[in-house]
Image (cartoon, helix red, strand yellow):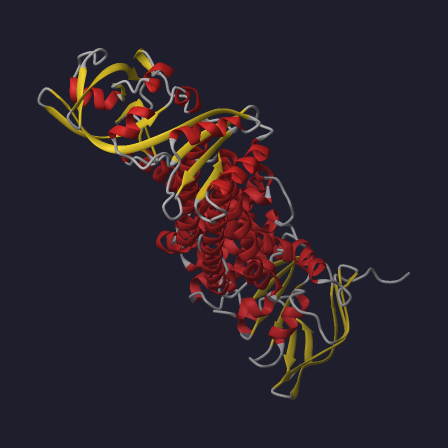
Amino acid sequence: MTAPEPLIRVEKMQHSYTMAGESMTVLKSLNFSINHGEFVAIIGPSGSGKSTLMNMLGCLDVANEGDYFLDGQEIRKLSDNRLAQIRNEKIGFIFQNFNLLPKLSAVENVELPLIYRGMSHRERREIARNALVRVGLASRMNHRPSELSGGQQQRVAIARALAGTPPILLADEPTGALDSKTGKEVLEMIKELNVQGHTIILITHDLEIAEQAKRVIRIQDGDLVEDRKVVPS
Amino acid sequence: MMLYQSMKMAFKSILSSKIRAFLTMLGIIIGVSSVIALVAVGQGTTSQITESLSSLGTNQLTVNIMGRGATTSLTYEEALALNEIEGVDNVSPVISGNVTAKHGTENVSVSVEGITPAYEEVQDFHVQSGRFLLEMDTEYRQKVALIGSDTAEDLFGTDNPVGQKVQINGSSFKIVGLLESKGSTSVGSSDEKLLIPISTAERFLQSKGVRSITLTTTSNDNVDDVKTKLEASLTAKFSAAENAYSVFDSREMLETVNETSATLSLALGGIAGISLFVGGIGIMNIMIVSVNERTREIGIRKAIGAKKKNIMMQFMIESVVLSGTGGLIGVALGLGASWAVGNYTTLNVAPSWNMVLISFSFSLIIGVLFGMIPASKAARMRPIYALRNE
């Protein structure tokens, strides 16, 4: 018997940019895999290549070399449209600066990934409302992002990531733009989501935040330098 | 579903910057409204002229005599002799001049035409009371006159002019008939004139003779044939001098009018095309600005699963909504302007629904064409680049 296929499998992933005629290797032959239900923090200083790695994992970009399997799907060979569809179905993004659309209300922002799935108005409104209730924003459905606090905006973004029920939540410095108290709340919410069964990949440069995860992958100069389980304290 | 959502978004973003949207649409608004208004005026005028021409019938020939050397006109007998040309039905020679007509203390300057009885049928101009001029009147050089309705009112007020006397350049004429009212046309009023027998006019006006003859042919089909013979006969009379006379047939005039209006329409279409094109460039310009401003939005949408075609669609719809709204405003403005011209000036207007439809669809097409480049620029954007953009 072979082990069940992991949710994410990265093999010899390598990526380099050419900048001003000079080739810069950002990722150097990375190998790791992430299983269903894990809570992984990818940590590294700025310039370590962790943002590039997150773009690769989030299917926003495709690595020059190596293989990436997401939920059994080979990512390298796919067209832009297919990648868009995979992002839509497989990945829930939570960004540092929330990335909400300012002209849309909270519920409309949460609906957005469902629109691109071709879901009917009534159906997606229902799902979006439920997602907002889940993150505790039942009373803020029709507020614009500018009418919400930073913590509330990030919760709208989490609701948006949850709405499409993707197998992976990809959080890029989710607390980076928040004060420490709201940051802690948002992190608690993310931990709670993991308890409920969501697979979470958390990108951060902050070791303290990374320690909240169950597994830490440390990236330095494009190399995987550490991959360890976190012992609950 | 996507379409509805995109249209809602497009309207939202237009409403959020009203002045910018309005300025963007201005080119289209001006283009569409000017085409509709100008074409309405052009077609109104054309149809008016066409109508008055075709009421004369298409079997008419008009001869104008400029003359050559000492022979500057025909006598009316010579003119009547044209009747002998095969295919000619009626000949109506006219001697015209200007006179002062007087009744009691009323005094008007009016044009007078010496005519034969054939005039009634050829010009389709009848009396509303009294009688028309008769052969006898011509034969005996009777001092009788028909009076136009406006002139009658000037001289006699509300009295019935028939049977009354009028002094024309000092000579007394008896009014035997009141002409029907024809209203004014582009060539002047038909209701301000006096008609007298041609033989009387020849003497009375001391005119050199007939300079204008209108003929009708026996049918619509032999107009060209008769024209050729007529020209041959006139050429003989004027010793082959060119420019001594000219012959028009009403079909030719209709054709001239139609050609002119076709040229006019083409010119209008050109102006419209240019202004819509310029309007389109305005739309493309603002759409490119809009795409650049919303790079981040495009990045977010792509990150959460928008495909190229979704982004393309969104910006195309925005562009078409912009140009279409401009087109609608233009249609309203153009129809309003046509209505105002028709109501407050003497010009005839005929707003053409075809033109409304064409210019509006043109504005939509402009939106599609000029939205294409900005929209595909947006659609091609790479999500990581677009997300990095602040």
